[in-house]
Amino acid sequence: MAGVIATPHASATRAGVEAFAAGGNAIDAALAAASVLTVVYPHQCALGGDLFALVALPDGRCHSVNGSGAAAAGVRVEDLRAQYQEMPDHGPIPITVPGVVHAWQAVHGLGASLGFSRLLAPAIAAARDGVPVSGSLERGIQQRLGVVTRDPGLSARFLAHGKPLCRGMILRQPELSVTLERLADAGPADFYSGSLAAMLVGGLRRLGSVLSESDFAEHRTRLETPLSLALGDIELQTSPPNSQGFVLLEALAALQAAGESWEATTPGSRLLLLALLAAIEDRERYLGDPRRAPVPLDRLLQAGALRERLLALDRGVTSARPGAPPAHGDTVAVCALDGDGMAVSLIQSVFQLFGCGILEPRTGVIFHNRGRGFSLRRGAANELLPRTRPAHTLMPLIVRRAGRVRAALGCMGGRAQPQILAQLLPAATSEREPLAAALRRPRWVVGGKDIDCTLPTVAIEADAPAEWDSSLRVAGYELKRIPALNEVVGHAQAVRLRADGTLEGASDPRSDGEAAVVPAAG
Image (cartoon, rainbow, N blue to C red; front, side, top):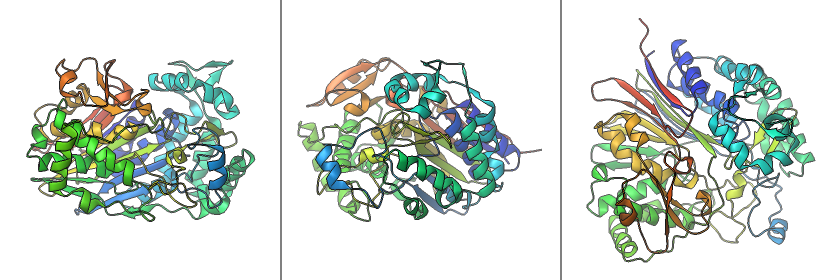
């Protein structure tokens, strides 16, 4: 089947191409690539992480796959409040139930053509035989070296003779290979209620985690209706809360309310920055587990209110002060589209680099620290409570034109994902330039600790036009130039169906990835 796939690592892209060549569709290609990424990009995703995806089917339906996990039923919130001002970033405390493996199964059930074990084969081989350390992995080890060194499991895999692995060295993960083989043979359920689950929970309990076998067994992937926003003949679809996807939709709706054409908006637009700041305020105020505290989306998207907020922000009145815990380097995106019109945007993550800093040595599984995003403040929308899911940064994106899928996009970038996608969308939908050129363009992000800045800051890549310094200067924010092609502004993946019927894909040069188009057989 004809198809296109883009991922942040060439090995993952090759696995997707092989799935297409074997008769698979976009789901097969995306899952093959996603599993390989847990092997070759372990600093950014792992079996012990979370996943959000959008799966658009040829019949016009689109499913939002929420593969986030909840806090333990036995979490002792008052004890944590007595000990911490905010959730710790490493160790067993910030681990929530990992949702990746169960979500792979859910995505597979939406229409895969190939067997689950066939799709895991490239990942099993990569873990068993080894892969060269990428540039991004080398940087990740260095950036979180203290965490890697403290954990026996991580240090055994990512240090050699006490020194960090370097680019080009071979990384072998035999325990992870055995775990993947077990999943291929016994199925994903073994991760949550089988012998593998018992090993994982036992290892975590010995380290002080309160997660139990029942927490794992009760985990379910949620299949939900995507959020959507119509902009002329374009429809955007993304994940609903507990994903931050509404931030992008709110910002673009604000531009529309202000009479600004989102398609003509340049990345250096001051109005775009203000619209995103307004939406960021709402994310910090409202986003959490919607089953406990729903986000008032109808009210937030009212045109009149959005116009007024943009005017207030332009006068320098803002309460947004990004001070959330670091979350960069956390995520990979996989985007695939096939000749039948099926599209997948899949994002999986460990939150911070190497997640909580624990590799369970018997299984080779690295665990995320998604619970780091919970608030310990009473009454917060994202307050830590037993069995609740945290606010999530992951937000896949599908673009339709006149009802037909035209593009799938996704990116790494933590809380900046809506900002990155907003800057990419006009070029990605207009076809005025190749996708590769759109992803190569300079970008900016706004943040604080999450972009390695002490103060609230607008960080702009060095090769951006000089006039961006003035257009993106707002009250209360520092302005900083950062090196070009910087992972701080995320790495994005994109695929699209062009107006002439051809397929196109691109991988961000800020990653180690590539895109590939697979022609129809014969």
